[in-house]
Structures are given as C-alpha cells and as structure tokens.
Image 1 (tube, rainbow, N blue to C red):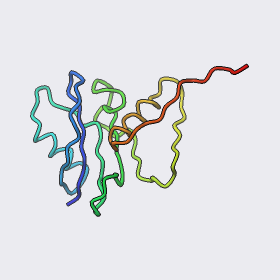
Image 2 (image 1 turned 90 degrees about the vertical axis):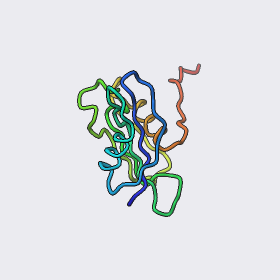
Image 3 (image 1 turned 120 degrees about the vertical axis):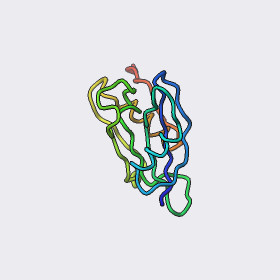
Image 4 (image 1 turned 120 degrees about the horizontal axis):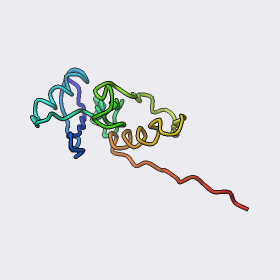
Length: 127
C-alpha cells in the first residue's frame, strides 16, 4: 500500500483539507477519499499526492485535476490536468497564453505539496 494525500472541493467552492489515504493506486485513493466524504452534491478530487515510502513529508509526485485549476464546473473537471514527478530542478516555469491557467496550476501544485508559491506582479519599466 502507498500513502496518498488527497484534496477535494465542494460544489459551493469550499475546500476540504488534505487527507491521508492508504491505497494501491491514485484511482483507489480518490475513490476511498470520496467514499469517506458523502456530501450531496458529491465532492470532486482536486489533487492527489503520492507520498514517499520512507515516510518523508514531500510528495514523490503530484497529480492536479482540472477541477483544482479551473473549478468543478469546467469541462472534464475529473480528468488529470498536470502531473509533476520530477523535482530535480529547483525552478519550474509555466509558459502559456493569458488565461490558460498558469498561475492557477502553480497555486494548485503549491497547495497539494504544502509549499509556498513565490509570485511577482508584472514589473513596470524603470527609467
């Protein structure tokens, strides 16, 4: 069995704290989490973090679902949006058009890992 941290969101937008689940796969972890939280209408899983077998606190991988970035009303909100499993680079870049979800994806990853996100406003021209 593997340890997972699962996060979900309610239809009204209220967030559920991450909860630890022991399961054989990400799919089973999400199913087990949802079975333990019977809300009406049902919750949607926003992220699943696979925790290391050595008991470490930082996840081996993080899968963010579309609901975690674009909300539960988005098309395909239960599908995976991004998976990060290579943490070998200290800096990650997100490149895309305005409104494509770069900042929301970065916030969702920070929330799923329990880490902070460093952001800056656009810098104006310095004369």
